[in-house]
Amino acid sequence: HVCVEWSRKIGLKLDIHRVGQVCGDSVTGVWNTKEHISLIIKGAQIMKIMPDSYVSNIDWIPVDVASQSIVDISLNAPFKNNNDYIRVNHILNPKRITWNEFLTHLQKCGLDFKIVSNKEWLNTLLKTPEYQDVDKNPVAALSGFFEKTINGSSNRSEEPLFETHKSVNRCDTIIDQNSKNLLTQ
Image (cartoon, rainbow, N blue to C red):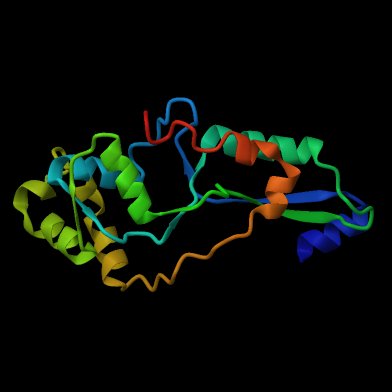
């Protein structure tokens, strides 16, 4: 509310961009290999298993699409009403998929793994000595994080779903460029 009052006071139009999970770019799909999703995928190459329900909805947005969307909205999308001083834009992929759909895409792209329960995946990670070697299995570096997350002690609730229709209406980039090559690179 401070931003709203401030923008009205000085007469400046303000866009607030709430950016979701940013992933690899839409051209090469290259993603930070130290992020936990990248590490889970790397772990699947080693352990040959993946958790069955790690997250409920995937709305990751490629870094180049996110940045271009922010630029497009900020520079090219006029405010509809002269009395509006502030807009909130949810910058994330409007084409959500489920974790199971994501796992199916990974398998179609050639990653060989069995889908197991979250508990079985975590127990295998924690109780198999060779899987605890971070040099051989990078996902082991986040064992404590996954233990808290999967066992529920982190007090995580269901991920919120953010409406994207206003952002999509303000910016074709979000819908036109999203996720073309992420799973095939």
